[in-house]
Image 1 (cartoon, rainbow, N blue to C red):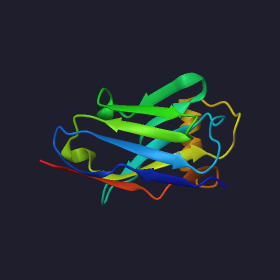
Image 2: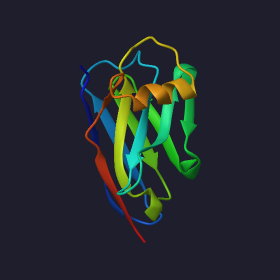
Image 3: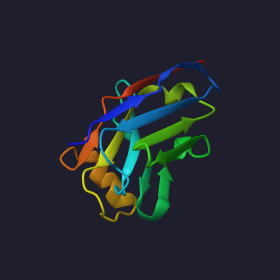
Length: 132
């Protein structure tokens, strides 16, 4: 079982930046589906950004152009660079990695994989607070 540990959250002012990291305990270099989710109090968990097969990347509309997802396969680490943060970005941020390696995904199938806890690994989350 792969364990994921997020870090990098914190409290920033509007317009500030943070970089979240998600370190995996095992080799995720052959995993073709991974991403970041967030959940604000009283809201549903939503996908923020995800990687899928062939270098595909999707972002939710509200973060497009401000957030950048990246991965370092040598370090088994997933990143989320967040710029121009807004109060509405405040949430608990989670990373998720598909359970199976060497499987091809498109954006839709990747998201379906990640939201299913039986088919993905999840971290415990890191809190992001944005003050106005």
